[in-house]
Image (cartoon, rainbow, N blue to C red):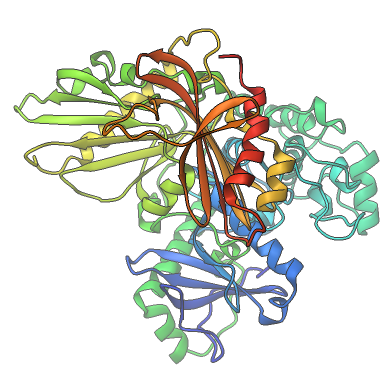
Amino acid sequence: MNTGDAAMKPLGSQDPDQLGRYRLLAMIGRGGMGQVLLGQGPDGRLVAVKRIHRQFTGNPEFRARFRREVLASQQVTGAYTAGVVDHDAESETPWLASEYIAGPGLQDMIGEFGRLNLSGLKLLATGLAMALLEIHRTGLVHRDLKPSNILLTNDGPRVIDFGIARALEDDVTLTATGAVIGSPAYMSPEQAECRTLTSASDVFAVGAVLAMAATGASPFDAASTPQVLYNVLYSSPNTSGIPEPIRALVDACLAKDPSARPAPEQLLDAASRIDAEPVWPVRIRRRIADCQAEAGRWADGTASAAAAIVPAQPKSKWARLAPAAASVSAVVLAAIAFWGVGVEGHAVAMDDPPLALTDDETRRLDICALLDPSVLGELGTPVGEFVPSGISGCTIAYRYQDGRKVSFGLETSNSVAEMRDDKQPMGSTINWMPVYGLYKESASCDRMVLTQSGLPMVLNMSASSYPPAGDLCPAAERALATVVRRLSVNPPLRTFPPGSLLPLDPCALIDIAATRSSVGDLIRSSTPHGCALTGADGYYSVDITDRVRPDNITGGKVRQTRTIAGQTVYLDASGPEYCTFIVMVMPTRDDQAEQVRATYFSTAPQARGHCETAADLLGPVLEKLPPS
């Protein structure tokens, strides 16, 4: 679906006034598959609502693709990507809503203003590398990264449209065997040949996008699609017109061999070393401000009133506002007022390196050490002892200089979906990571960020006091910022005993094929010590932690046991739609041990019980565990 560069228009007589909880304000764009509408939530936030044309809703394959888009978009968020905030994929006319990005598309800006300067290219390269880190860590490959799927904001680019994104484990084709899905001028050679894709395919697309932004044209451009595909497969692109600091990076991304391309981490490192301030040209910053003002007028009703009174007049190329470019995927950004900088202002350079932890470091983090006075000492003096909460949380109180006693808690067990469902962007950033929370002001407040590389990890800092001691949201955000700074320099790590489960990757323990057959087409969501595979028919999750033994809990309750794969497991809970097993491994104290907690949930009717399916899925997990 492509809306070109037209400005938003009033709703038509056939357009709904409301979808879900969102009041609809204007038409952003219309395409062959559906329409995208500007909406406003009950809290005033603007959203872009993607609504599918009725004639496609009876096609099971199309509905399945739409569900995949919803699942994929829900997993991806961060400073340079975004995800869905609400949806109804099962309604008569399916729709999804995402927070609205008031910014023009890269394709339109290059077409109107010409190629980017070195500063703009650095900001583009850095943002796209950060976006790939976010997309790929969810187990997805975007598959359609092109200039029209990149929106520009003052903070950097935003990658949108996950309509054909697929899990890396999945087959490349969405339709008939041999069908080519994607945009020929920006697809990788392996995608053009319908081979199985890896994350390197998106890196190739980044190279093609950077070449286009630096020269004004795709490096594989030709008069016909077959010739474009031939160039992608066999021709060496001419990159001589690209500025030298960017040229080597583009050449590396455009290697025909996927294994020869840089990883997104290497792409980010190379882009950060370019000697230029990462900022858009002033004309693009002006256009971004125009887009923000246009969206604001629709939100307060002045744009719709003017459109109803004033006849449409031909617009100059400069006056064509580009918020319509946001329509293709209806993507995430919070209230636009939070993100703007002045028309003549300067974007802030990325002086602080982005937080980057290896997978092993993420799983070994000593959470209590991150609340130590060596980290939070600027906030006050610690009072009492650390109170651990399993492997992923810790709490301690600090006394401020004014005498207030504030309890700080740090958790890393929240999932990306939980953060998106419960929190909203606050408008600030820490190391270029958007800060999320529930309240702007509160006597009991939390602030969180989602790390931009490595394993998905939500860092959730809470601040509370009893009795209540005023607004603690600034304290929570300040504490979170100090933790991020420490993690960027010298993360404190735990040492686990031999045979411990805690350093393991839970996703690697799961039989992917068996899980897919039970829950359907998979989208992966993980935390440092957990993995959830979600499909149209349910989900299966495996979490590793250290908890109280299930056969020795308060009240003397003894749980049922059964034998699976030669091991004794405990039935933790079961119901009409779910079943949860607990496996105790390697006791650490008399009443505690590391444990594997596995849950199977299904919405599809089954001929046998859910616990039988849960047992079948748990068997391969147990076989991969180290001996206890």
